[in-house]
Image (cartoon, rainbow, N blue to C red; front, side):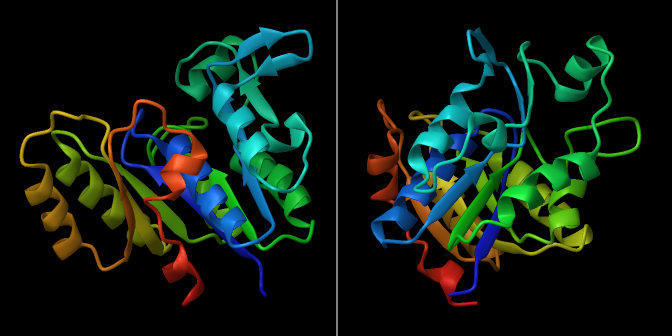
Length: 229
C-alpha cells in the first residue's frame, strides 16, 4: 500500500481538529494500518520535567500505532495559548514553513500506511510576516481533510476555507462535521447545505460527546473514501 498522508485543517480555532484527527487515526488502527499523527506546531503547552508538552500532541502520540518521541510529534512548542507567531516573537524566535516541513519530512521517511499532520487554528494562521501555516501542506504536497465545527457561522467558514485551499493549489480529500455546539439551531439543514455544496466526501458526522475519546469518535468516521483515490 502506498503511504497515505493528509493535512488536517480546521474552519476555525476550537472546532475539534485534534478530536477528529485522533478519531481518524483510531479508525485506521482498527483496519490494522500503521499510523502516525503529527502536530508540528503547538501553542498552549504545559511546563513539565520533560519540557513543554501539549495535550493535543500527547493524544496523537498516544493514539498512533507507530512509537515516536514527543519531539518528533511536536517539534515546535510554545507555552502561552496564543497565536504561534506572536508566541514566537515574544521569545525572539522566527517560525518558517520550510523548517516545519523539514521536521515532518524526517518522520515521513519511516514506513507507515497512514499519516495525519494536524495544523494549528485555521487555514490562514500566520507563521511570520510573509508566510501562513497553509504553506506547510503545500510544501509537503498533502491533500487536506477539513474539520468543520458545526455551530453558527460554520457555513461561511467552511466554504471560504475550502475555496482558499483550492486557490492554494491543494485538494480537499474529505471533510468531517464535528458538532461542537450541542444546541446548534438547524443543525441538519446546515449539514445538508454543506453536503450539497462540497464536492469532497463527508467522512463522518461526530455528535457532541462529553468524553470524545478516539475509540468513540472513530465509530462515527469512515476513512474508506480516502483509499479510493
